Length: 166
Ligand SMILES: [Zn+2]
Ligand SMILES: [Zn+2]
Image (tube, rainbow, N blue to C red):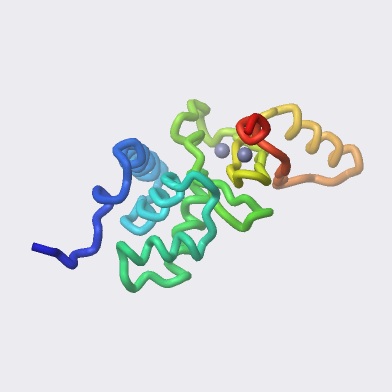
């Protein structure tokens, strides 16, 4: 018999993604947040995507779970996930990627995770580079002229190793 019930997370996400979502859930609970069902679905959709995803693509997918999902639902979920450090926003693409760093981080009281993003202009994938020297150089150069930086986004466009061998 055919059923018209909306798909559940179990139908859509791989076991690996569901495991990450469980860890994210525990992380949020331990940091005075709550990974609600909507936030969990949004994080799952970003995690499963092989490339950065935009808010409207997320909304389209989310609607297969929640028929009435509206843009503010997605933006609120994204804001929460950004604040928890579970995703990054790629400014150049106005899109989001997952980040497991916070879940693996062993630093006490907020880590200094400062990533740079490598955007492949051929396949569209984004990978994270974490080179402490870059963040330090930005900080020091700004400070040298009396500017106090609070946030810096470093996005590098180019061709990834895989695409270069194709
Ligand atoms: Zn990251
Ligand atoms: Zn590529």
